[in-house]
Length: 123
Ligand SMILES: [Zn+2]
Image (tube, rainbow, N blue to C red; front, top):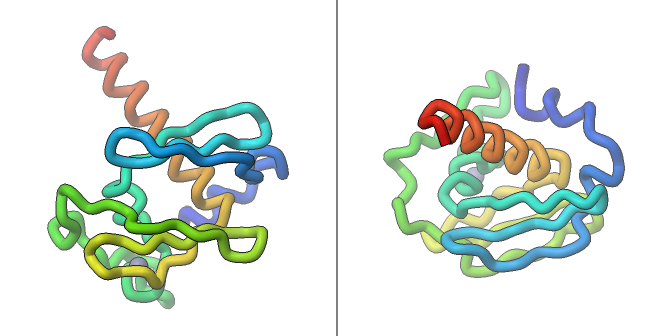
C-alpha cells in the first residue's frame, strides 16, 4: 500500500492543521482533533513526495537516506492553498508539496515507531 493510500482513512479534523511550532531539529504540528505531532526535519525531507524523490510511475523511492545530510533543516515553510505545505530545505530542494493527509500520516508513523522503540527498550 502506498503512503497516499494509507492517508485515506483520516477525518477532516485529523488532517486540518491549526498551528505549528518549532521543535528540537524539527517542528510540532497541532491538528484540529487535538493531537500534537512532532516531526524531525530529516524524516520529513526523506518523505518528500515529489517526482525527483519518488518515481511517479512505480511509486518507488529514488531518494536514499545517504543522499540527505544528517543536519538538514527547513529554511522556510509555506502553505499551499488550503491543502498542503511546502518546505524549502537547506540542501536546496523545494519541489515537494506535502498534502495535509500525508503530513498527518508521517507524524503518526513517526510516533508509532518511537513508541515501539521505547517499548522494546522497556521504557
Ligand atoms: Zn522531493
